[in-house]
Amino acid sequence: MARVCDVTGKKPQVGNNVSHANNKTKRRFLPNLQYRRFWVESENRWVRLRVSGAALRLIDKKGIDVVLADMRANGQA
Image 1 (cartoon, rainbow, N blue to C red):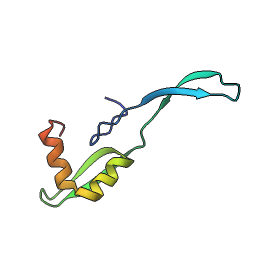
Image 2: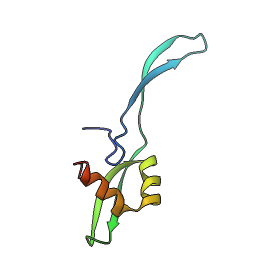
Image 3: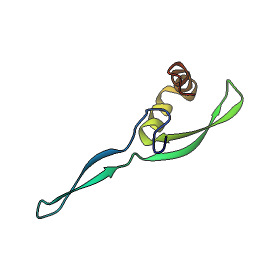
Image 4: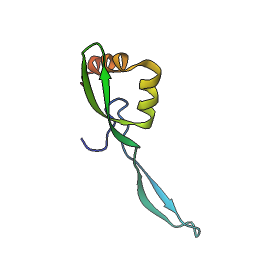
């Protein structure tokens, strides 16, 4: 699926552009997705993930091994 974070599952959201005259038109709020390579020491290899900014902070906090274990437990990786 396009524009989905591999770690958090964040997807585009739908909202409105609101003009000064309070006219509303539909728009999409896209997640800040980046392709990143992470070195997994336990597997001795690189893993390439499409992650959001929030997922990058989560990986910094928990570590890539824990995040990958959670992804595999949920059937994602």
